[in-house]
Amino acid sequence: MAGREPLADHTLSYLLAGTAQRTPAPGGGAGAAWTCAIAAALTEMVSAYAGERDTALLDVADRASDLREHALALADMDAEAYSAYLGASEDGKAQALSAAADPPLLIARAAAEVAALATGAMLAAPKALLGDARTAVLLAEASAQSAAQLVVIDLAATPEDPRALEAKACADAAASARTRALG
Image (cartoon, rainbow, N blue to C red; front, side):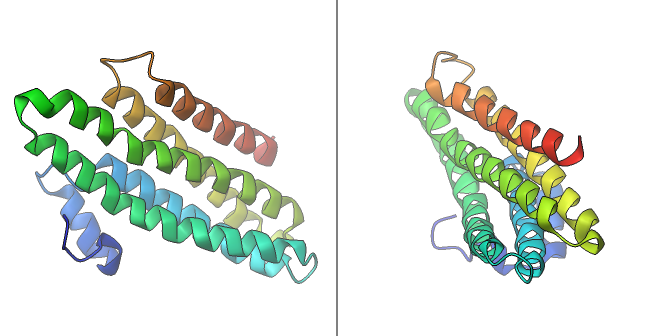
């Protein structure tokens, strides 16, 4: 994917059609990253509105914006890492698969943070934005859970790898945010 146009520069219709193709990438990692980006965008919007009441939430909107952009870049990083694994020599497969675990771990981290931000924004948001905020929390959790599973799958040969535990912790943090938001 190096030298190619970033995935985020394409239309949603194009991305979905490309994901539906019988090709390995974009796939689950990109889907988790895009889901995180959508959750971050919703968090950004809710926080911007809530910032009219609580200016501290304007910082949340700024952070959500950063995470949105980061998640979009992670979709490309994931596709590149998985493509590198597929193209690796037999001797390099294990190392390439281990490296392929890094982008979904970064996605899980970002999604856990988005879930926490969205929960905080939801608690301060006007009632008219409650649905948007809850959607952000749920999408962020789905992203974190999905990305964590990808990390675990990529590291199945080395279950003691601390990245698997960190990914699970990110998924757990997102689930806790969801419980706080919806409980």
